[in-house]
Length: 87
Image (cartoon, rainbow, N blue to C red; front, side, top):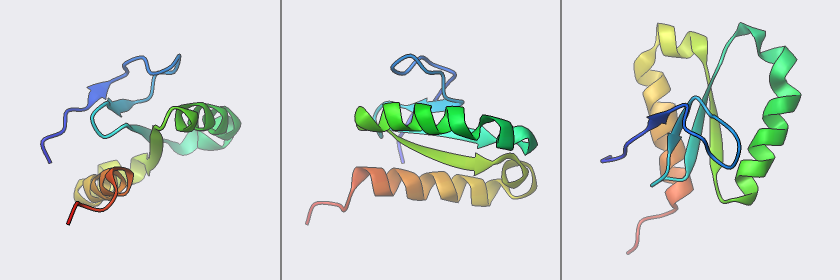
């Protein structure tokens, strides 16, 4: 899709796992310990959203067990964030 993702770059005071400025998309890889950090994630996601940045959460087991599905999830999030193509 011609996009570049940065690893752990600062975005409005937060450091998402991956960040694509062009698509205004943050990607978080969520692990097994996710239950303890859900509230912090919700605050971060809300702050980023106020700046027009969408966050997609990808389960770490999906990344390890089906990387193609993880990539497809991110690709779909990019398309949703970009909106429909111009006709």
